[in-house]
View 1: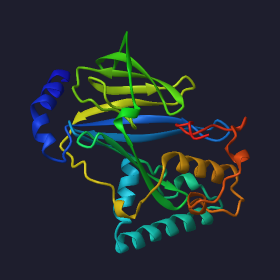
View 2: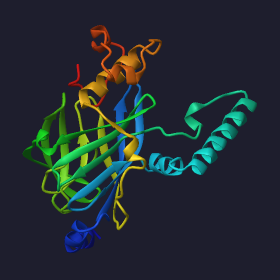
View 3: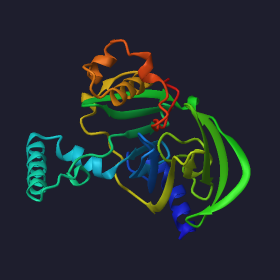
View 4: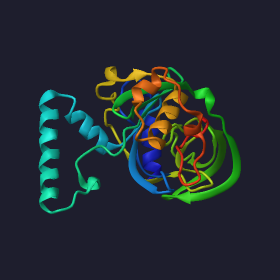
Length: 274
């Protein structure tokens, strides 16, 4: 099966380069730490070919697709209202089970542009930023281990405030991976930090899905990556403040105390905004 998958990807790479369809789909379990070191577990997928990839939450994309039309948005709101009424009737509101997006991030990597584009939400504001591939560099080691039946090689990088160790397999000639990771001679199946944050592949299959674009991408406003992270940190650490997320990005000064590391909380996956 492994040989069939790898050879199929190689044979169709040229065609995929001319289209927006994927060669491969990889599912990842993601682990991050939120405030008070609370663990957050989510599911993301990677659709990739030789020139384009998208890392995204299938559930979030499903909802974004639905609410991209007036009719779909109205239907989704009715679903939320019905679920909320049912919870009230049972005497307990559980936000975890309320139909909604839990993750907002889309990561698009374009080989043609040598650029990463990240779409996200800041409070209720759709925002995006870009960064060049050149910001990510690797050191490859000699260690190996088996993941999902594939022989993987270790590589490491320091990236935006954290040290990462990843495992990639040359058996799958797709130079991509979870989140922003790419550029190694094989598919990245695992990426971790010393404190347990990470991405862990749990499924790989051949795919011809349309990689497509982000729904309502024209509604996202462009900002600087660090400014977005600083504003998000200020909103999280000062939820009772009067400044909105958009106001923070529009030039309102952020109290430096709000950007100091908190002893009782986690941090974002990128920490170089402080």
